[in-house]
Length: 294
Image (cartoon, rainbow, N blue to C red; front, side, top):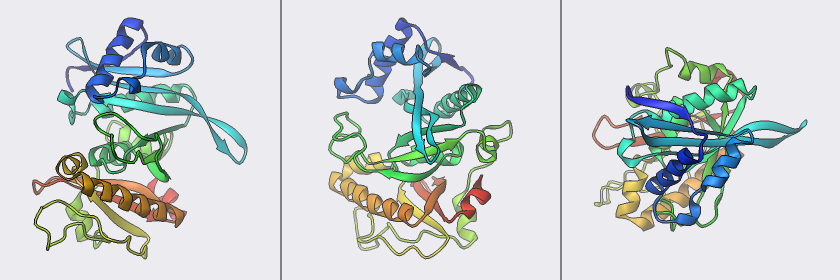
């Protein structure tokens, strides 16, 4: 990260680089690329495109624009963070966090306090960034948000998504993005505290070594729950596509049930200490969530 610079992207020449980076990140579907003329229009009308640059090469970008959300008091302005992509050769290096932190700083100067975006809840590394590192929360599950997708990462699977809420002026968020960020949760201390996953994804009678979802969503009986997902869903999908679909439908039922029962996703644990990654959502029930986690 020492050689990475975060810049505003504003010119047509820079936007062409964003077009190409999209092809590198989401290969296989030219029709899903946000074109230059749309990118220019977005930034000329209150939107924001930021780029991560290393040695004069664009290696990451983030795209967002103003939007409205419905509230009991009428429409309310927010920032919709629509896309973030990191070149495959530069992932897991902190670039995504740096882009989101720059977005956080700029949107606050626009006098907005709410940013939303969507992501696939089965992608552990995305969950770790969005929930654990950035402090977003989630209580909204959207089925087939983008219909049938055609790019190489999403083709053939339902485009179910979390829509997360990033309340950028809260103590919760500032404690994660400040000069001394709050450390993320670690699995071993959480397990020692007595909190463990409320279902098992490692069936002892199976020989394929891949994590399998339970046949049924278990009952929700505690105020705090750990919901485990595959640590590396993309690897699992490449090995067993049918199993990947099973996980999609299990987590759809799991999170739709959780949110209907007033649980909120408040944290995420990503653990790779034993060589095999594990990803676990923290689900918290009730209004006390706001007091405890903000």
